[in-house]
Length: 199
Image 1 (cartoon, rainbow, N blue to C red):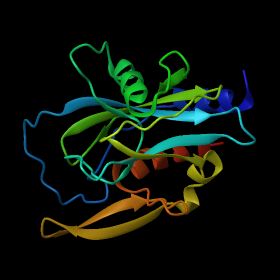
Image 2 (image 1 turned 180 degrees about the vertical axis):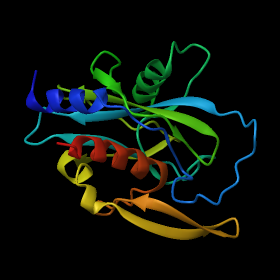
Image 3 (image 1 turned 180 degrees about the horizontal axis):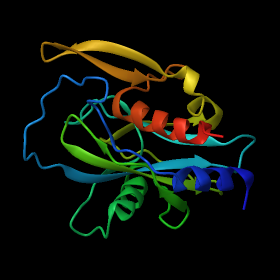
Image 4 (image 1 turned 90 degrees about the horizontal axis):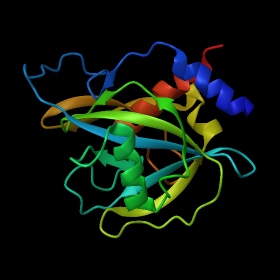
């Protein structure tokens, strides 16, 4: 077991608190009895290069939910999926052509509620061998990697805001080069960074 794998396993073993798009907006009143749709996303960490990297995508601008945003490969749990891990692996194959048997699953981060009504579970996995990444036409505009060192640096995360449906909304962002990583993806990554930062 590598030092990185051991550190991630220790982090995942710690107690976690669920997060949401509303963490920085406590005045938001959420409807009682709301039903969230389960989803799984893959936090895939490539370990075969000079330094570990996280695989991310830029979503197509034609999508209904979160068009043009930076996201993990993944999506909602379908009827044929066994669980959120199965959904994340299926979607990663469909979106970026990552073979389902390639990721080494280490565990889950706490679930995250999105403003669009999804209960997202991030599935943390190591990708220890190269694969031929291919973006799914119509869904993924681009596949890119961000250094794990950048993602795990808690100091890089910023709280920013914009107006949404007539109200100023606050959110986390962790820009990387030309990629503006924000919202749910940044919140989940920040949670991972905070867990890994505990000594």
